[in-house]
Length: 373
Image (cartoon, rainbow, N blue to C red):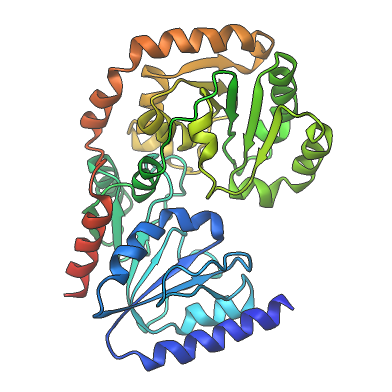
């Protein structure tokens, strides 16, 4: 049934886009969990009657209508998606998908501009492959730090020079807009990052960490990364079965649900961008479990560039080694003390890295209109 639904979506999209004579902008989402990163820009562009906006998705559950003009079109993640991307005809295609052209999704000669929007605040040269952004025409950056990194890597790897705009992180805007005061002092958000390495925190220690927190009578929210759901289905199933009857355990797989940010008093993670989001918008402590580094760029050590995530980790976070998990209660209390002493460094690090934290939607809209003109 999903194939027929995808094929119907493919035909629907082809029919709709042919009817439009004005500028065509297409947004693609890998799943409904990536909608958060695109939605504010979609809505602000939708106000311009001179533009035709389309939203295509690989998630059959990503069906909520965005506006009167924009209804999600399901294209699956198989043959229909490959076919659509190879033939797509539009002025701009906007995605959060890395490594365009390096896997089954290729560039179409009928699409004028491929635009990348970040779905994380992390630096561009550690958690991403060295070719992750190579084939994009335009990149909307979170701030000056990413622009400098991308320009440096263009020179280092002799990549073609692309258009780069400092617009700010759209999801940060979303988090701020949905921030509320529902803090529960004994509720902890546990959000391990995903890693291409088979050795990773979720698969190896999530069970133990959740068990330890529940034993200490902390309400515990496990927030999964979309890649974790895809890559660690069996371990996730085991965790659900083991803790589902514990009233203090909550599984959060729907990343459109932002309550865990607001309700938790602290975040426990290892790598990944959620720590930056949490520190900057919630201004609450973060414990980093030091286990396996998330390095997806094989040339990372040769580049000689620091990363924003490591800077925040060392200067604001509380770090616990994996062999110290039995002392997690001590580190939770220590993190609260440490953070109260370091909270003033947040704005300092934001300024130091040129991270844009205001007007992200308007900045992004202006960049899109410049590209069209």
